[in-house]
Length: 358
Ligand SMILES: *Cc1c(COP(=O)(O)O)cnc(C)c1O
Image (cartoon, rainbow, N blue to C red; front, side):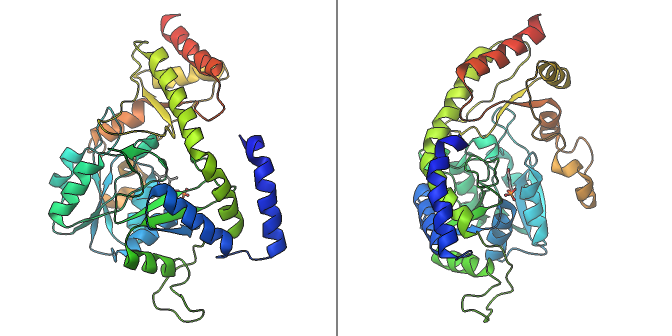
């Protein structure tokens, strides 16, 4: 994949060296425009990474100490950390076991007088059930902040991720579907005022140099990464199609194999398959078996946030969020990346069949 676009990336690198402008220059502006167009939003603000994107989004909404933000119980810890970093409290809501995404039917029961926002996470590449989530937010006057780190290009009822919430964060960490060559992230919004605030917060709270309107932070997207990202963005839809093709092969070939449960899409949702996550009660043995056949797999994620040492303060126990715990104990991410061949997918599936049926 890198070979394929290397020839396109090198001129961008040369432009960068010649120009000698390293932060908040024309390549960042161009990428912000390109990514906003991709997400069908009015604005994008490039930032240093995905966690910062979520933190700045929450700060932009003035969410802070005493406030609660609803998050999935089974997400990557960054979603929770963003809430904690602004001083608010993450309130976990369980996912649907078939789609792995937050269950909209359970959200209302978690809303209190302190709730300020819902943070849906489009986990493993699938867009959450955004119509139901937006309706709940509207009814209870809550903000929605999408965590779109894993799902650039996925849709619900034809609308693209990063365009539903009031202000949303995404990550261009190298391992994400749209990966930079280092850390990078972005915020998307349709709201003019939120855009202005986010834009200022990422640059020390300053628009006019040395005059600070807000206590901001330093979280800028750098020119080099922005230039690379604009180029890679042109390939993203093609890569997402390849990911969907690989996922459909897995779905077909793993159907009815042992106790393997393949991932489901919610009605109206599409996925860009950041990950292809199956479940099995023999997860550790299967992973070991695949390992001995030189097939690398990963676990996303082995321990849910509520059971992490970092979140002891919230006082949760094992059993408090059983679906998140079940997913953590049974999930396995199979190899999936653009460039993986049909033959390689078949080899993975055959090895899994061997594991169950000898
Ligand atoms: C990767 C990720 C983040 C954080 O992005 P970074 O760029 O690594 O800071 C946030 N949320 C989710 C769901 C992620 O997968």
